[in-house]
Length: 452
Image 1 (cartoon, one colour):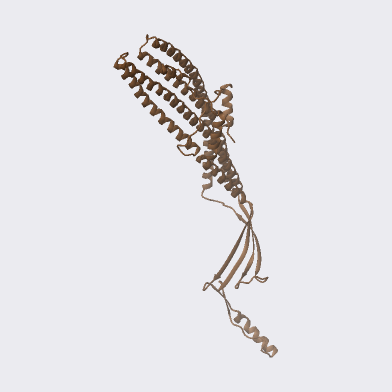
Image 2 (tube, helix red, strand yellow):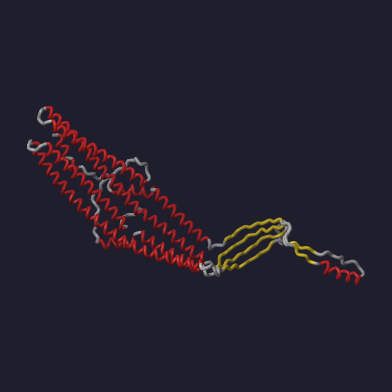
Protein backbone atom coordinates (compact mmCIF):
# COMPACT_ATOMS: atom_id res chain seq x y z
CA UNK A 1 0.00 0.00 0.00
CA UNK A 2 0.95 3.60 -0.56
CA UNK A 3 0.15 4.32 3.08
CA UNK A 4 2.66 1.69 4.18
CA UNK A 5 5.48 3.13 2.09
CA UNK A 6 4.85 6.64 3.38
CA UNK A 7 4.76 5.48 6.96
CA UNK A 8 8.15 3.84 6.70
CA UNK A 9 9.66 7.30 6.16
CA UNK A 10 8.45 8.61 9.52
CA UNK A 11 11.25 6.98 11.51
CA UNK A 12 13.83 8.82 9.42
CA UNK A 13 12.14 12.23 9.72
CA UNK A 14 14.69 14.03 11.96
CA UNK A 15 16.18 17.41 10.88
CA UNK A 16 19.28 17.03 8.78
CA UNK A 17 22.33 19.31 8.67
CA UNK A 18 21.81 22.24 6.32
CA UNK A 19 24.52 24.73 7.21
CA UNK A 20 25.95 23.16 10.37
CA UNK A 21 27.20 25.14 13.32
CA UNK A 22 28.20 28.03 11.04
CA UNK A 23 24.58 29.08 10.56
CA UNK A 24 23.98 29.27 14.30
CA UNK A 25 27.24 31.19 14.77
CA UNK A 26 26.05 33.77 12.24
CA UNK A 27 22.80 34.25 14.12
CA UNK A 28 24.66 34.62 17.42
CA UNK A 29 27.00 37.26 16.00
CA UNK A 30 24.01 39.11 14.58
CA UNK A 31 22.28 38.98 17.95
CA UNK A 32 25.35 40.27 19.80
CA UNK A 33 25.48 43.24 17.43
CA UNK A 34 21.77 44.09 17.39
CA UNK A 35 20.20 42.93 20.65
CA UNK A 36 18.59 45.92 22.37
CA UNK A 37 19.83 45.05 25.86
CA UNK A 38 23.37 44.66 24.52
CA UNK A 39 23.10 48.16 23.05
CA UNK A 40 22.00 49.46 26.45
CA UNK A 41 24.92 47.71 28.14
CA UNK A 42 27.37 49.21 25.65
CA UNK A 43 25.89 52.66 26.29
CA UNK A 44 26.31 52.10 30.05
CA UNK A 45 29.97 51.15 29.49
CA UNK A 46 30.57 54.30 27.48
CA UNK A 47 28.85 56.37 30.14
CA UNK A 48 31.09 54.85 32.84
CA UNK A 49 34.20 55.59 30.77
CA UNK A 50 33.11 59.21 30.38
CA UNK A 51 32.54 59.43 34.13
CA UNK A 52 36.09 58.09 34.64
CA UNK A 53 37.47 60.73 32.25
CA UNK A 54 35.54 63.37 34.16
CA UNK A 55 37.02 62.21 37.48
CA UNK A 56 40.54 62.22 36.06
CA UNK A 57 39.97 65.66 34.56
CA UNK A 58 39.51 67.07 38.07
CA UNK A 59 43.24 66.70 38.68
CA UNK A 60 44.02 69.20 35.93
CA UNK A 61 43.86 72.95 36.52
CA UNK A 62 40.58 74.66 35.86
CA UNK A 63 40.69 78.00 34.06
CA UNK A 64 37.68 80.32 34.08
CA UNK A 65 36.93 83.81 32.78
CA UNK A 66 35.10 86.09 35.22
CA UNK A 67 33.75 89.55 34.37
CA UNK A 68 31.81 91.78 36.77
CA UNK A 69 30.45 95.31 36.37
CA UNK A 70 28.77 96.98 39.37
CA UNK A 71 26.73 100.13 39.90
CA UNK A 72 26.23 101.11 43.57
CA UNK A 73 24.40 103.73 45.58
CA UNK A 74 24.42 104.37 49.30
CA UNK A 75 26.14 102.06 51.66
CA UNK A 76 28.64 102.84 54.40
CA UNK A 77 30.66 106.07 54.31
CA UNK A 78 34.02 106.69 56.01
CA UNK A 79 34.36 110.31 57.21
CA UNK A 80 37.95 111.57 57.21
CA UNK A 81 38.47 115.06 58.87
CA UNK A 82 41.16 116.14 56.45
CA UNK A 83 40.20 119.88 56.69
CA UNK A 84 40.20 119.93 60.45
CA UNK A 85 43.61 118.31 60.53
CA UNK A 86 45.38 120.13 57.72
CA UNK A 87 43.80 123.64 57.48
CA UNK A 88 45.50 125.00 60.64
CA UNK A 89 48.81 123.76 59.28
CA UNK A 90 48.14 125.43 55.92
CA UNK A 91 47.28 128.75 57.61
CA UNK A 92 50.54 128.69 59.57
CA UNK A 93 52.52 127.93 56.42
CA UNK A 94 50.83 130.82 54.55
CA UNK A 95 51.64 133.21 57.43
CA UNK A 96 55.27 132.14 57.51
CA UNK A 97 55.69 132.46 53.77
CA UNK A 98 53.52 135.58 53.42
CA UNK A 99 51.66 133.81 50.62
CA UNK A 100 48.50 131.93 49.77
CA UNK A 101 50.16 128.82 48.40
CA UNK A 102 48.32 126.47 50.75
CA UNK A 103 44.59 126.61 50.19
CA UNK A 104 42.23 125.18 52.76
CA UNK A 105 40.60 121.83 52.08
CA UNK A 106 37.30 120.27 53.10
CA UNK A 107 36.70 117.23 55.23
CA UNK A 108 36.51 114.06 53.07
CA UNK A 109 33.78 111.42 52.84
CA UNK A 110 34.96 108.09 51.37
CA UNK A 111 32.17 105.77 50.21
CA UNK A 112 32.73 102.09 50.99
CA UNK A 113 31.03 101.15 47.68
CA UNK A 114 32.27 102.85 44.57
CA UNK A 115 29.45 104.11 42.30
CA UNK A 116 30.96 102.34 39.31
CA UNK A 117 33.34 99.39 39.30
CA UNK A 118 34.39 96.57 37.05
CA UNK A 119 36.55 93.51 37.53
CA UNK A 120 37.59 91.32 34.61
CA UNK A 121 39.97 88.43 35.24
CA UNK A 122 41.17 84.94 34.44
CA UNK A 123 41.23 82.48 37.34
CA UNK A 124 43.19 79.24 37.48
CA UNK A 125 42.35 76.70 40.19
CA UNK A 126 44.74 73.80 40.70
CA UNK A 127 44.12 70.99 43.24
CA UNK A 128 47.30 70.37 45.20
CA UNK A 129 46.10 67.87 47.81
CA UNK A 130 42.58 66.43 47.72
CA UNK A 131 42.01 62.84 48.94
CA UNK A 132 38.37 62.98 47.79
CA UNK A 133 39.41 63.58 44.17
CA UNK A 134 41.96 60.75 44.34
CA UNK A 135 39.57 58.12 45.71
CA UNK A 136 36.72 59.34 43.53
CA UNK A 137 38.91 58.62 40.51
CA UNK A 138 39.62 55.12 41.84
CA UNK A 139 35.92 54.48 42.40
CA UNK A 140 35.00 55.65 38.88
CA UNK A 141 37.64 53.34 37.42
CA UNK A 142 36.24 50.33 39.26
CA UNK A 143 32.71 51.29 38.17
CA UNK A 144 33.79 51.43 34.52
CA UNK A 145 35.35 47.96 34.87
CA UNK A 146 32.16 46.80 36.60
CA UNK A 147 30.11 47.95 33.60
CA UNK A 148 32.41 46.10 31.20
CA UNK A 149 32.13 42.89 33.21
CA UNK A 150 28.35 43.30 33.40
CA UNK A 151 28.27 43.56 29.62
CA UNK A 152 30.35 40.40 29.27
CA UNK A 153 28.01 38.57 31.63
CA UNK A 154 24.98 39.48 29.56
CA UNK A 155 26.81 38.47 26.38
CA UNK A 156 27.39 35.01 27.84
CA UNK A 157 23.77 34.70 28.95
CA UNK A 158 22.47 36.02 25.61
CA UNK A 159 24.54 33.49 23.66
CA UNK A 160 23.01 30.66 25.68
CA UNK A 161 19.52 32.11 25.26
CA UNK A 162 19.95 32.46 21.48
CA UNK A 163 21.18 28.88 21.23
CA UNK A 164 18.25 27.55 23.25
CA UNK A 165 15.77 29.62 21.23
CA UNK A 166 17.36 28.36 18.00
CA UNK A 167 17.12 24.75 19.17
CA UNK A 168 13.48 25.29 20.15
CA UNK A 169 12.73 26.55 16.64
CA UNK A 170 14.58 23.62 15.07
CA UNK A 171 12.77 21.18 17.35
CA UNK A 172 9.39 22.75 16.52
CA UNK A 173 10.15 22.57 12.81
CA UNK A 174 11.19 18.94 13.13
CA UNK A 175 7.95 18.08 14.90
CA UNK A 176 5.90 20.03 12.35
CA UNK A 177 7.57 18.18 9.47
CA UNK A 178 7.01 14.90 11.26
CA UNK A 179 3.33 15.71 11.72
CA UNK A 180 3.03 16.83 8.10
CA UNK A 181 4.25 13.43 6.95
CA UNK A 182 1.95 11.80 9.47
CA UNK A 183 -0.93 13.86 8.11
CA UNK A 184 -0.27 12.56 4.62
CA UNK A 185 -0.39 9.03 5.97
CA UNK A 186 -3.62 9.63 7.88
CA UNK A 187 -5.28 11.28 4.86
CA UNK A 188 -4.25 8.35 2.71
CA UNK A 189 -5.53 5.99 5.40
CA UNK A 190 -8.94 7.71 5.37
CA UNK A 191 -9.07 7.44 1.57
CA UNK A 192 -8.15 3.74 1.61
CA UNK A 193 -10.63 2.99 4.42
CA UNK A 194 -13.46 4.60 2.47
CA UNK A 195 -12.51 2.64 -0.64
CA UNK A 196 -12.45 -0.61 1.32
CA UNK A 197 -15.81 0.21 2.91
CA UNK A 198 -17.33 0.91 -0.48
CA UNK A 199 -16.10 -2.52 -1.61
CA UNK A 200 -17.58 -4.15 1.54
CA UNK A 201 -14.17 -5.25 2.75
CA UNK A 202 -14.36 -3.36 6.09
CA UNK A 203 -17.16 -2.06 8.31
CA UNK A 204 -18.19 1.55 8.81
CA UNK A 205 -16.40 1.82 12.19
CA UNK A 206 -13.05 1.50 10.40
CA UNK A 207 -13.82 4.68 8.45
CA UNK A 208 -14.89 6.46 11.64
CA UNK A 209 -11.70 5.45 13.39
CA UNK A 210 -9.58 6.69 10.46
CA UNK A 211 -11.38 10.03 10.41
CA UNK A 212 -11.07 10.37 14.21
CA UNK A 213 -7.32 9.82 13.93
CA UNK A 214 -7.14 12.51 11.24
CA UNK A 215 -9.10 14.98 13.41
CA UNK A 216 -6.80 14.32 16.37
CA UNK A 217 -3.83 14.90 14.09
CA UNK A 218 -5.25 18.24 12.90
CA UNK A 219 -5.54 19.42 16.50
CA UNK A 220 -2.00 18.33 17.31
CA UNK A 221 -0.65 19.88 14.11
CA UNK A 222 -2.26 23.25 14.85
CA UNK A 223 -0.68 23.26 18.30
CA UNK A 224 2.74 22.35 16.88
CA UNK A 225 2.46 25.06 14.23
CA UNK A 226 1.55 27.59 16.92
CA UNK A 227 4.55 26.52 19.02
CA UNK A 228 6.79 26.95 15.99
CA UNK A 229 5.45 30.45 15.34
CA UNK A 230 6.00 31.48 18.96
CA UNK A 231 9.51 29.99 18.97
CA UNK A 232 10.44 31.91 15.80
CA UNK A 233 9.03 35.16 17.24
CA UNK A 234 11.05 34.79 20.45
CA UNK A 235 14.21 33.98 18.51
CA UNK A 236 13.74 37.06 16.32
CA UNK A 237 13.05 39.13 19.45
CA UNK A 238 16.45 38.18 20.85
CA UNK A 239 18.10 39.17 17.56
CA UNK A 240 16.04 42.39 17.29
CA UNK A 241 14.50 41.35 13.96
CA UNK A 242 10.94 41.35 12.66
CA UNK A 243 8.93 38.83 14.65
CA UNK A 244 7.84 36.83 11.60
CA UNK A 245 11.18 36.90 9.78
CA UNK A 246 12.03 33.35 8.66
CA UNK A 247 15.22 31.58 9.66
CA UNK A 248 17.14 28.55 8.51
CA UNK A 249 17.65 25.83 11.10
CA UNK A 250 20.03 22.91 11.06
CA UNK A 251 20.91 19.93 13.14
CA UNK A 252 24.60 19.58 14.11
CA UNK A 253 26.54 16.78 12.52
CA UNK A 254 27.44 15.46 15.95
CA UNK A 255 26.32 16.24 19.49
CA UNK A 256 28.88 18.00 21.73
CA UNK A 257 30.28 15.98 24.60
CA UNK A 258 31.89 16.68 27.97
CA UNK A 259 35.03 14.88 29.06
CA UNK A 260 36.50 16.59 32.11
CA UNK A 261 35.45 15.88 35.69
CA UNK A 262 32.86 18.02 37.44
CA UNK A 263 35.54 19.48 39.72
CA UNK A 264 37.43 20.81 36.72
CA UNK A 265 34.32 22.53 35.40
CA UNK A 266 33.62 23.96 38.86
CA UNK A 267 37.12 25.42 38.94
CA UNK A 268 36.62 26.83 35.44
CA UNK A 269 33.32 28.44 36.44
CA UNK A 270 34.77 29.98 39.61
CA UNK A 271 37.60 31.39 37.53
CA UNK A 272 35.60 32.81 34.62
CA UNK A 273 32.10 33.68 35.89
CA UNK A 274 31.52 37.42 35.61
CA UNK A 275 29.22 37.47 38.64
CA UNK A 276 32.20 36.85 40.91
CA UNK A 277 34.30 39.47 39.15
CA UNK A 278 31.46 41.98 39.50
CA UNK A 279 31.25 41.34 43.24
CA UNK A 280 35.02 41.70 43.53
CA UNK A 281 34.81 45.04 41.73
CA UNK A 282 32.01 46.09 44.05
CA UNK A 283 34.11 45.15 47.08
CA UNK A 284 36.93 47.31 45.68
CA UNK A 285 34.47 50.18 45.28
CA UNK A 286 33.29 49.89 48.89
CA UNK A 287 36.92 49.68 50.04
CA UNK A 288 37.77 52.92 48.24
CA UNK A 289 34.61 54.44 49.71
CA UNK A 290 35.84 53.61 53.21
CA UNK A 291 39.23 55.14 52.47
CA UNK A 292 37.63 58.25 50.99
CA UNK A 293 35.44 58.74 54.05
CA UNK A 294 38.41 58.30 56.35
CA UNK A 295 40.45 60.75 54.28
CA UNK A 296 37.73 63.34 54.85
CA UNK A 297 39.55 64.08 58.12
CA UNK A 298 42.44 65.50 56.07
CA UNK A 299 42.48 69.02 54.61
CA UNK A 300 42.07 69.98 50.96
CA UNK A 301 44.65 72.34 49.49
CA UNK A 302 44.10 74.31 46.30
CA UNK A 303 46.18 76.89 44.49
CA UNK A 304 44.21 79.84 43.06
CA UNK A 305 45.79 82.35 40.68
CA UNK A 306 43.99 85.46 39.37
CA UNK A 307 45.09 87.92 36.72
CA UNK A 308 42.82 90.70 35.54
CA UNK A 309 41.78 94.35 35.61
CA UNK A 310 39.92 96.47 38.18
CA UNK A 311 38.68 100.05 37.96
CA UNK A 312 35.77 102.40 37.55
CA UNK A 313 35.98 102.43 33.78
CA UNK A 314 36.43 99.61 31.32
CA UNK A 315 40.04 100.16 30.52
CA UNK A 316 42.64 97.46 30.17
CA UNK A 317 46.03 99.01 30.88
CA UNK A 318 48.91 98.75 33.29
CA UNK A 319 47.23 101.03 35.80
CA UNK A 320 44.25 98.70 36.24
CA UNK A 321 45.78 95.22 35.90
CA UNK A 322 46.62 93.10 38.89
CA UNK A 323 47.92 89.63 39.78
CA UNK A 324 46.96 87.57 42.80
CA UNK A 325 47.99 84.07 43.92
CA UNK A 326 46.49 82.25 46.88
CA UNK A 327 46.94 78.93 48.60
CA UNK A 328 43.57 77.84 49.98
CA UNK A 329 43.29 75.23 52.72
CA UNK A 330 39.92 73.76 53.70
CA UNK A 331 39.69 71.53 56.73
CA UNK A 332 36.46 70.16 58.16
CA UNK A 333 37.20 69.89 61.86
CA UNK A 334 33.79 68.79 63.11
CA UNK A 335 30.55 67.70 61.39
CA UNK A 336 28.54 66.29 64.24
CA UNK A 337 30.02 62.76 63.92
CA UNK A 338 28.44 62.40 60.47
CA UNK A 339 31.65 61.22 58.86
CA UNK A 340 32.10 58.52 61.52
CA UNK A 341 28.67 57.14 60.64
CA UNK A 342 29.52 57.27 56.93
CA UNK A 343 32.66 55.20 57.58
CA UNK A 344 30.70 52.60 59.54
CA UNK A 345 28.08 52.36 56.79
CA UNK A 346 30.79 51.85 54.17
CA UNK A 347 32.43 49.13 56.29
CA UNK A 348 29.10 47.33 56.68
CA UNK A 349 28.48 47.61 52.94
CA UNK A 350 31.87 46.05 52.27
CA UNK A 351 31.16 43.24 54.74
CA UNK A 352 27.82 42.51 53.05
CA UNK A 353 29.51 42.41 49.62
CA UNK A 354 32.10 39.92 50.90
CA UNK A 355 29.31 37.67 52.24
CA UNK A 356 27.52 37.88 48.88
CA UNK A 357 30.75 36.91 47.12
CA UNK A 358 31.08 33.77 49.23
CA UNK A 359 27.40 32.96 48.68
CA UNK A 360 27.84 33.41 44.92
CA UNK A 361 30.75 30.95 44.90
CA UNK A 362 28.64 28.33 46.64
CA UNK A 363 25.73 28.98 44.29
CA UNK A 364 27.94 28.58 41.22
CA UNK A 365 29.26 25.27 42.55
CA UNK A 366 25.66 24.12 42.97
CA UNK A 367 24.74 25.32 39.46
CA UNK A 368 27.63 23.39 37.91
CA UNK A 369 26.63 20.17 39.67
CA UNK A 370 22.98 20.68 38.71
CA UNK A 371 23.61 21.41 35.03
CA UNK A 372 26.03 18.50 34.74
CA UNK A 373 23.42 16.19 36.22
CA UNK A 374 20.78 17.47 33.78
CA UNK A 375 23.17 17.13 30.85
CA UNK A 376 24.08 13.55 31.72
CA UNK A 377 20.38 12.71 32.15
CA UNK A 378 19.63 14.26 28.74
CA UNK A 379 22.44 12.22 27.20
CA UNK A 380 21.02 9.02 28.63
CA UNK A 381 17.60 10.16 27.44
CA UNK A 382 18.87 10.19 23.85
CA UNK A 383 20.09 6.61 24.21
CA UNK A 384 16.71 5.55 25.57
CA UNK A 385 14.89 7.47 22.83
CA UNK A 386 16.98 5.77 20.14
CA UNK A 387 16.20 2.35 21.63
CA UNK A 388 12.53 3.29 21.82
CA UNK A 389 12.51 4.33 18.17
CA UNK A 390 14.34 1.17 17.15
CA UNK A 391 11.83 -1.02 19.01
CA UNK A 392 8.90 0.98 17.65
CA UNK A 393 10.26 0.64 14.10
CA UNK A 394 10.72 -3.11 14.49
CA UNK A 395 7.30 -3.49 16.09
CA UNK A 396 5.69 -1.53 13.29
CA UNK A 397 7.51 -3.63 10.71
CA UNK A 398 6.04 -6.81 12.18
CA UNK A 399 2.53 -5.36 12.52
CA UNK A 400 2.71 -4.04 8.96
CA UNK A 401 3.61 -7.47 7.67
CA UNK A 402 0.73 -9.09 9.56
CA UNK A 403 -1.62 -6.32 8.41
CA UNK A 404 -0.68 -6.94 4.77
CA UNK A 405 -1.38 -10.65 5.27
CA UNK A 406 -4.75 -9.89 6.85
CA UNK A 407 -3.75 -11.24 10.28
CA UNK A 408 -3.70 -7.83 12.06
CA UNK A 409 -6.56 -5.40 12.45
CA UNK A 410 -6.55 -1.78 11.44
CA UNK A 411 -6.62 -0.86 15.14
CA UNK A 412 -3.34 -2.69 15.72
CA UNK A 413 -1.87 -1.04 12.63
CA UNK A 414 -2.88 2.46 13.77
CA UNK A 415 -1.54 1.85 17.28
CA UNK A 416 1.79 0.69 15.86
CA UNK A 417 1.88 3.74 13.60
CA UNK A 418 1.09 6.06 16.53
CA UNK A 419 3.79 4.43 18.64
CA UNK A 420 6.33 4.91 15.86
CA UNK A 421 5.34 8.57 15.41
CA UNK A 422 5.62 9.27 19.16
CA UNK A 423 8.98 7.53 19.29
CA UNK A 424 10.26 9.65 16.39
CA UNK A 425 8.93 12.81 18.02
CA UNK A 426 10.50 11.81 21.34
CA UNK A 427 13.91 11.37 19.71
CA UNK A 428 13.69 14.84 18.16
CA UNK A 429 12.76 16.35 21.53
CA UNK A 430 15.47 14.39 23.35
CA UNK A 431 18.26 15.55 21.04
CA UNK A 432 17.26 19.21 21.14
CA UNK A 433 16.74 19.00 24.88
CA UNK A 434 20.32 17.79 25.15
CA UNK A 435 21.53 20.68 23.00
CA UNK A 436 19.62 23.16 25.19
CA UNK A 437 21.13 21.57 28.30
CA UNK A 438 24.57 21.87 26.74
CA UNK A 439 23.94 25.58 26.08
CA UNK A 440 23.08 25.97 29.77
CA UNK A 441 26.22 24.00 30.64
CA UNK A 442 28.38 26.39 28.59
CA UNK A 443 26.69 29.35 30.25
CA UNK A 444 27.07 28.06 33.80
CA UNK A 445 30.69 26.92 33.39
CA UNK A 446 31.60 29.98 31.26
CA UNK A 447 33.28 27.61 28.81
CA UNK A 448 31.60 28.63 25.56
CA UNK A 449 32.71 30.88 22.74
CA UNK A 450 31.96 34.55 23.47
CA UNK A 451 32.13 35.50 19.75
CA UNK A 452 34.31 38.55 20.32
